[in-house]
Amino acid sequence: MGRMPTTARGRATRERILESAAELIQRRGVAAVTLDDVERAAKVGRSQLYHYFDDRDDLIRAVVHSTVDTVLAAQEPMLLEVGSLAGIDRWFDAIVANGTRQDAVGGCAIGSLASQLGGRDDLTRQAFVDAFARWEAPLIAGLRRMQESGELRQDVDVTELADLTMAAIQGGLLLAQVRRSPDQLRLALRGARAALEDALTAPPARASGRAINP
Image 1 (tube, one colour):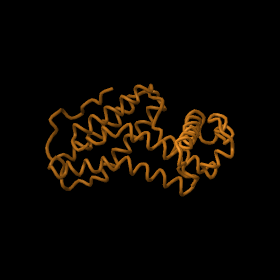
Image 2 (tube, one colour):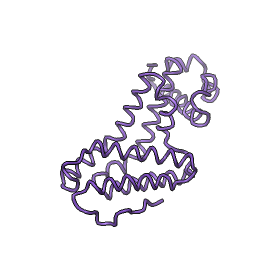
Image 3 (cartoon, one colour):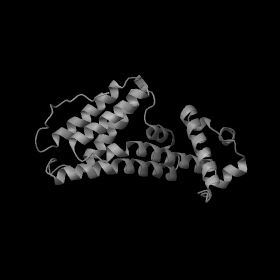
Image 4 (tube, one colour):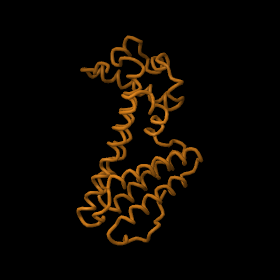
């Protein structure tokens, strides 16, 4: 990996390079972005870029990690509350609300990168494995708390339930992006919520089939 900066100026330069690369990749796709493009956008020279990143692959992996940090930081307040069905509802509502603000065209920043880079090499693939594990970990922990409190059945595999939920989120975001409609995301989350309801020890206080709010 490239050198990590030790000064405020160096950190600002590295962050500017990362932000420029991430913005270009989001607009054009990974394959269409060159180091020359990044240098022009970040207003740096090749020597500066290589000071912080070994090569283009190293820069792209850094963009992956930075994107993951941004996505998870935005969701952290909701993820800390997923130890109940009500908390999961609030998380789902926030995901739909974010998709609605983007006119359902943004999709998932992590998923978009994964679709382009997941098979690139083992280091990059592992970066996405770690990314989704980090995203899923608070949900697994929350489901275990629900199990410990008696809200969730003891025979439920919380890891499988979390996997199903994450698959619904990613699939819903992709369909919403392709079809330009947040309704696709709402439907996917409704299916995930139905699976969560089936795992409860008692029927939820609210009616089954709750609409996911925009």
